[in-house]
Image (cartoon, rainbow, N blue to C red; front, side, top):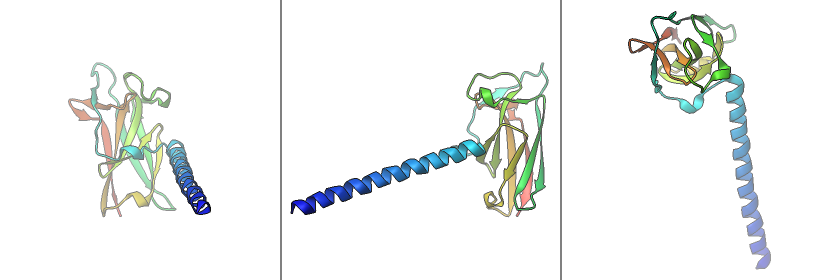
Length: 160
């Protein structure tokens, strides 16, 4: 009987350890993926950030999206900004006029945080026949830059 209990304890400890190890590596892999691609999948929801009104006495940031069909599928987005500087080194810090990062949404769901002017969106992201890509300009503290209560953004429509 003691061999059976001993074997059972070893089995339970082994299974539990295996589970925790697999969860650790799953988290680590997801974390590395998020960091390397700058994805922000943990926050897949509609716009939920506060707004920061732009001082209209200063140059007003603007954004424009160009989308190019990729030869392997999906789209390469070119995010062109005016009067705005991408500052990944300041993310999470205080608001500084006309600097920060961008958020990319597809059909209202946030898929990524952007720190530069190019981004690839896979065809797998597009679930509907007609899909709307929206890119917002965000301050260092993640608030959406806004003028008169409307966030500064541009959209692009993709048909499957």
